[in-house]
Image (tube, rainbow, N blue to C red; front, side, top):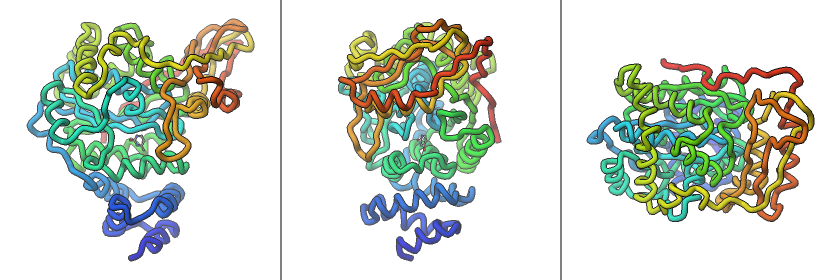
Length: 432
Ligand code: URA
């Protein structure tokens, strides 16, 4: 079958066979199928979807597009992945926290995707930190430190690396099949036994409704279960950004504040809840699953793990102890409350788009990003505000993208004259 014939099948709403997927994805990884054909196929998948079987086959083909790691010699291997949100720096806190609890976190993360940030882009704000490790170095670090974090590479899930970069700039991200296969192919290739999925729902997430988020969670849980992985999913709110900062270096700064026990409570609470899931899955008692991660954070053990991890991957670990060294854009613009009242809405999608406009994400494949820009949020939902009080600060470089960022933020802030009760952050825990 030719590539145009495979594209026709998805365009016309048919389900692909494994052979078709191998031909298409294998050809793309080998460099024989160009971006424009894959972009057309991604849009057809976005519009017509995939059956659960097709999604599972696509995941398998993507996971097997490179090496698959065998972590069976390592103790308690756990992995966590978010479906993508604004200000979601959870992995930066959770991964060292789990490692400090004695688990092994050997993880493959992504870059920014559409209006959401990515762990690899964030970590690259630390000078010298390197996302590309060979298999031997990956396993050695997992064994010695209990924490290693890499991006997709030529060896690990290369198909996801290529598809991810193309989806980022072709408006084809919010598809259950494409998100499930992207995330689970990385999880299967990197080999952890326990997988905790943070499925975001709301304005700033790719799944806007709880029903769509449940469908995505179930698709990933089924793939995990059928591959013999102990997989759990937590649905969490993404109507409003997580924590206080959105933007690459700013989020590393905030994650470090949390590791230093100085951070926002929503970020800390979410990390503790996800850690609890991971520890329960690993057989800890319910009370230990609550107390052990808390202790790891409060004692500084999680911070020490993060420091060792940064150094092991070539990063300058002095930044871990002095986050003010992180390069933050010098330009500032403050957006203030237009009336007295209570903060009712701080729209995560608008804030994500503002970061993108300032240069913090990509509009074209492979584009260089500006890690120093972003948005700081001075108030959480429910906060009492006075007219003129700061609500947001935009960090920009010489005004670059500032006008577009301002435009993205029109209508992003809602203030009610009545007191507002914030929504819970953890919405649902899902198991098969
Ligand atoms: N994270 C991923 O790795 N892939 C997606 O498609 C979305 C979030």
